[in-house]
Length: 200
Image 1 (tube, rainbow, N blue to C red):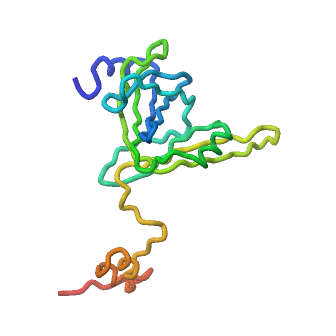
Image 2 (cartoon, one colour):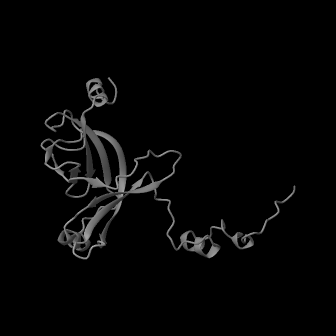
Image 3 (cartoon, helix red, strand yellow):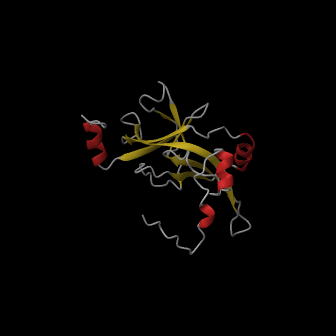
């Protein structure tokens, strides 16, 4: 038996419903799944017994979940559309702190009654970065605008990312690491200029 039980693999090979689950490990963990009713299920080794995943309807903008290869970090976003305007306003005022917390995505095969056949099989793990809310005005003025929220998640270690205002100059490096001479020759390099390598 491997990481996924053999009977589960056989179930996944057949035409069965599949539940997709999202867990954000903040102070009060956010647990939702792509469904319409609450689902008593958990991730083995992560969720305690009696955990309930709330039905979030249809998650939109679910990105491709890539694994980290060769240290290349990435950032993706999970979106939820049709959110109540009051909730979006409340989220902008008192959003839970999520920067740096773990985000788990998993699946579970569902039976004919849309009940999970197994616990959640974890497939992917990321690190939460920030919330974002948006409002899309309809083309028809008689209709209400559509509010959406998105959770931006970093894949892998993105701690080496530079600030947007960073510049690779000797003065900037001295602020970060006094005495470091790594960037002192940067002024010699300008666009469309070739620097001849020394000959020994």
